[in-house]
Length: 266
Image (cartoon, rainbow, N blue to C red; front, side, top):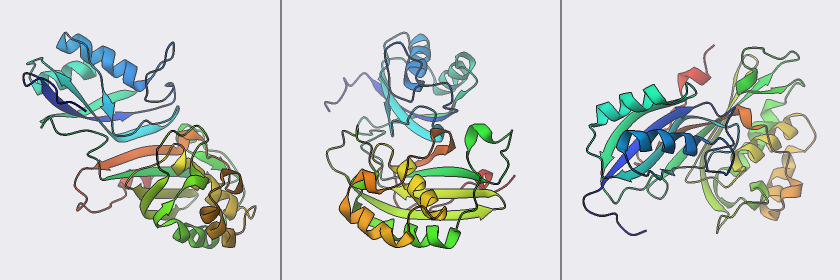
């Protein structure tokens, strides 16, 4: 990617949003997207066209606590004014949490070293009225030891073809899954996934497969052959979008992995 003109500034944004009413991050004609909403807002504030580049293109319905994006601008607007102005114009389901000026060599996607997603399952015979927009309701009891044993197989560097969407355009399906944890807090299951990158639907397909194992629909012992076979049809279903959160993007791989308390407490 060519460097922008020297008069331009590169601004890094830290974003939080609820994905329920958006058709994902990426611009789409005739559809509300997070990118499109943000670009229209920032263009008003900077008096010029804005093109955002995100750390990850979240799917329709997926939420974010720590999405990172950047854009280049010739505007000299002070960063605190940009932060206040953006949040006064944005809808209440998108919040700009932080703005920083960064070197022109920074790229929200290509400079990222690790990304963390969290997926929430409400595992109880009855649904939760308050949590419903942010969880996958699974009524049946789940065998947590079998799920954890299968999850262990996925850690490390692998070809994750079995967990990528058919529409994925990634040039390679090899990723390094640094962590895959399954935590239980009463009726809530918290899946924590950290990798150097995620294929389209990869996090949701992993969770869907682990839940199928917990239900007894796929044996835990099948996970090595699912992974090695690389066939999407052998893995489990895609977990619903509303349970997934992009939590954090690391640009320094030395920082520790930490699951935010908000997912562990009521």
